[in-house]
Structures are given as C-alpha cells and as structure tokens.
Length: 287
Image 1 (cartoon, helix red, strand yellow):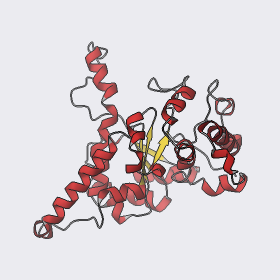
Image 2 (cartoon, helix red, strand yellow; image 1 turned 180 degrees about the vertical axis):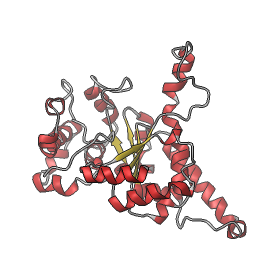
Image 3 (cartoon, one colour; image 1 turned 90 degrees about the vertical axis):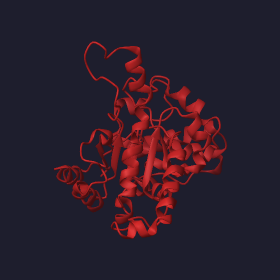
C-alpha cells in the first residue's frame, strides 16, 4: 500500500515521497486515499505531486510518438495537468482535516497557479451561496477559501517562469521553489546560471534567496539543522542578486555537507546554486 511506502520512506530517513498524481485511476478526492493522507500526516513527510500523465490526446508510444504535434502537446501542456490533483486535495477536505500535512507540485511551473487559486476561491464562494444544497449533501469540508490552504500547506516548483514570477506575490514568495530538473531533457542544465539570472532580474534579492534556497528547507524539515551550522547573514549578503546567490551557494554547500554528490559540490560547471530538493530530490538528514 502507498501508506506503507510512506512509513518505509520515513524509516529510511528520507524527506519526501512522490506521486504521479495525474495518472491515478482513483480520484484523489475519494476516501480510498485516506490511508495515504493519514500516513503522511503521521510521518510528517510531504507528498509531492509530480507531473506526468493527464493528457487525453497524447500518444505515449508507436510511430506517431515523435510527431512534432504530439511531442509539442506532451511537453508544453504537461505542467498544467496538476489542476485536478490540487483541487481534489483541497476540496475533498484533506488539507483542512490535516493542517500539518504538506504537499508540493513538482516541475509544474507557477504561472497558471494564480488563476487556478482565484477560480477555486470563486467556486468556494458559489458553494457557500448554495448552503442549503450542501447541508443536504454532507456539508462542505472547508472552513476557509482554497487559496488559504495553498498558502498554508502547498509549495510549487518552477524552472523558467517569468510570468509566474511577475505575480508571485499572489501565491506568496514562501510558496515557490526553483529547480533545475537535472538531468531530464526539460532541465535548465547546463545553463542553470543563465536561467537563474533571467528569472531573478525582477526579484528583490531577499525574495530571490527565498525562492532559490530557503523555501525548500521548510517542507523538507531542514530548517533547524541548517541554521545550527550557518551564521545569520550580514545584511550586505542580500544587497544584490549576485551577492545573494553567492551567499545561498555557501549556505547550501554547508547544509548539504557530505550528503552532496560531487556534481553538487562542484556545481553544474558554473552552476550558481546546487539543488536542495526544490525539485523533490531526496535529501537525507545529516547526523
């Protein structure tokens, strides 16, 4: 069972589990998933919803697989398939019932999320207007707008998303994490430094530090360990995006320590920021 796997991950000392949420056959709002959500709440492991599946017209094999139309739909539309899993987890009441649970949307981008949250909030208001209907159908399982649950319990990752970064304040800069997706074809590698530069141009240096580094620590439960080994930054560390990235690199290298691979220690050629699980890479706790 998936619940047993979550407990096994906890026993191994891993920090997260991942689910191809768009490929599930049983809807995520169904009660059949209750054991998984209970195990996640019990262990404190965040459940990552990774893109993959959910595309109705895409062929996954055969002579037309590499057709430009098929491949274009497969790559360009993949990130948008997390709308159903996100809505399912929130409207089913799972986020409300387990306020300590955490979820992340992996490799999904963030530009589509502000509208999705707005749409879910509008749906919630319409549900409230139909109170008598819901009282006769088991009642609503939410006590606040869906966007409030997102800002409390959900994180999302992106690789390049200039549109999303323009409206990141609608999500909360603490809900967003950068990832390179190395070594997959959709990765920013080996031009991750350039991608960071382009995506950080409109960010305040402190927000860039959160997005590139600090936000990944909370869902992965590494806040105290990192802070215990890294001194509080001098204000000059955040004086500019360049100094902020240099400071972030130093913090990550200290935080990862012996758990970092040679590629992480050396960087992706001139890669500024080694990954700290922003794309849900496994990070083992440092003893």
